[in-house]
Length: 331
Ligand SMILES: Cc1cc2nc3c(=O)[nH]c(=O)nc-3n(C[C@H](O)[C@H](O)[C@H](O)COP(=O)(O)OP(=O)(O)OC[C@H]3O[C@@H](n4cnc5c(N)ncnc54)[C@H](O)[C@@H]3O)c2cc1C
Image (tube, rainbow, N blue to C red; front, side, top):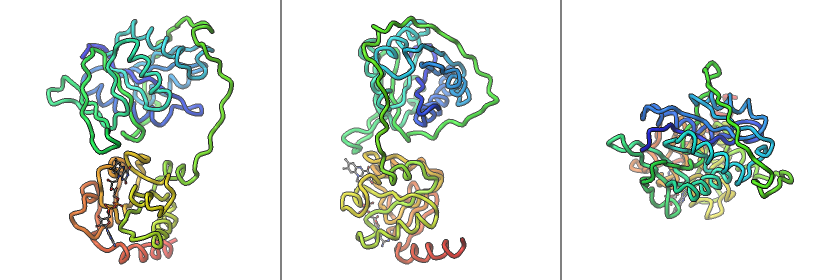
């Protein structure tokens, strides 16, 4: 591994640092402490002073900021030229990017152009036992396996999947060093022209699932679609969102977009309640970062109890209807 620092390439979403950037930042910070390296955030954009400061508040020791009108919106060639120029000057050891559309695009291009090893969509990042290498862990075969991938090139690059880590905490009192760099860009360097944004509609149930502090998820233990209302009623009573296992969505018991897991959405609410869910790794990898997990399952050996903070071994039909009643009564 090179001597240089650890970089996180920022991404903005609707005028603020994207959640996935903040999640990437929290893991990068941990690595920087373990490896005794500085954490540097790379802020590329236009009118981006605030974003540069924000990335410092979210944990970067230093920020390298590049500002240019041609960088107002993400474009592959412009951003890649800037990142390559900065790499040549500062020689980083590790570059981490959010595994968003843009992050994947940029990482792929830099990897090919600079011959840098890249692991895409990491779900976990761990220091190797000798503390000299990094295990870049990513799901493969649609989440059936988690592979420990090692990077052999001197510079290491990785994109980090959404929900893989808890987001970094914001500390406005932090002193930040911001280095402003200029990279000469011409319109011909970009080769594309930004026309405008068109926001695509997002399923409101999915939106709620991804943003709620409480999620109640159901699995095959519900027994059939006729009982699914219990998941919805408990979620409603708690002011939370509904989630499901792949098995339940495949059977059409609820909206397909509500699947939680490696091939669904990854969530990390304050409270995750799992009803009749066995705890297959493909499911738990989508919710095990939740702050508190309560599982109700009649099988005491169900794997869901391995990730649960609290477990109730019982038939969910003995518990959930009374629980809904009790919560409603207390309101
Ligand atoms: C490539 C691949 C990708 C996958 N991706 C995902 C994914 O993203 N998300 C996902 O969820 N799964 C995914 N899966 C499927 C996953 O492997 C499991 O099959 C699935 O999560 C199991 O769903 P389940 O827990 O609802 O069902 P089951 O495994 O059948 O578990 C049902 C549980 O309910 C309990 N139970 C039964 N009756 C009651 C009752 N009355 N009261 C209380 N408990 C009861 C049982 O003890 C059991 O533990 C994937 C699989 C593959 C092969």
